[in-house]
Length: 482
Ligand SMILES: [Fe+2]
Ligand SMILES: [Fe+2]
Image (cartoon, rainbow, N blue to C red; front, side, top):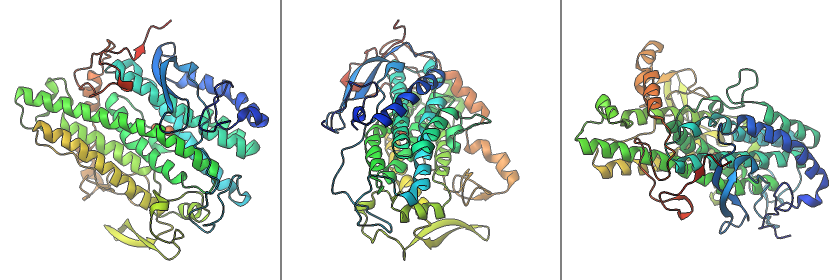
């Protein structure tokens, strides 16, 4: 079979020759009904019967993989898609650097690898659960369709991780695959594994911020797993990254369109001062200081996903050749890091200080720095949108120490500028830095659905271009499909 093309003749579309891999096919077919139950229970609420204009992968060739068509979400062809195998591929870092990449799990690293796959896998269904109420308040059919596209692809990412678990980890893998359907975002007894994936996504601005900041953490994790010496994991993640790019597009353009609309409304009515919040809100748009607060929240929650700045787990994953650095093969060094150092921001004697740490244990910090750099570029693009309208306001990423629950700054309070605060001062100032209950109420008040083709809610600008080059009034979701 041609590995580039996806086999749609089987119940589970795939390019891994499942029809000749009876045991794994059986395991996946056994898992499938539970997955559909999960999707029907926890997937987009109220739209399972609607026809949605979705893209589906027909090939893993980057030039032509997506085909668009109307589909009911529960009938979406979720499948197992891996980037093509490169026979020459090597382990490119750590103590096995230079060995041939592994096609099977090395026995000594089995537990570590399983953990990496499960942690990644757990985030995928979590975001679908977090976003399941949003269809009902979509600002347009275009946005609704993008939400559902992200949702079905996160579902497919779960399939991707479950395939690895079932193919390479035997019975433990099958148990982990079942547990991925058992945990629920925000559940008191069986929550998802990582903090940001148990937070609510109450409104569309949260959704756009989430897809910009938290899906971008996903991108960084996938990038470093795509470097893995365990080749099936690398190939899986490489294909997932092509889907992830769209999720971040949804986030970045979503926020841009909100900024655009707010600034235009301010200009049209002659409001010069972005801090005249009540006046701006009276126009039915989201004021810029609130945009900054939302950003502060989602960025800080996403920083927590990188784990502790100094971590022996991270060092072990790297040494073992399982999880590399962002752009590992492009970095000019020995790719073993045994004698190297990296600067880490820490609390030293009550002060935020840059300290030299062994590069191996500082790998989480390094990946997080790469993430921050990637975020900062996006924020600059947002600032350009504001600047072009002539409104005088700049968005800024908050300091690393701001609002953290994991790592060096978990036990201190700091302003977005990085000034340390006492508990009392933090309690007083908090609502200036993070969305308050009143801010949330205001945003909620704007979340009324707009379901007419080509129409958009007042608080957001239309996109510059349609999906799949469709015209502005295209009906991306046929809500009453039946
Ligand atoms: Fe994902
Ligand atoms: Fe994603």
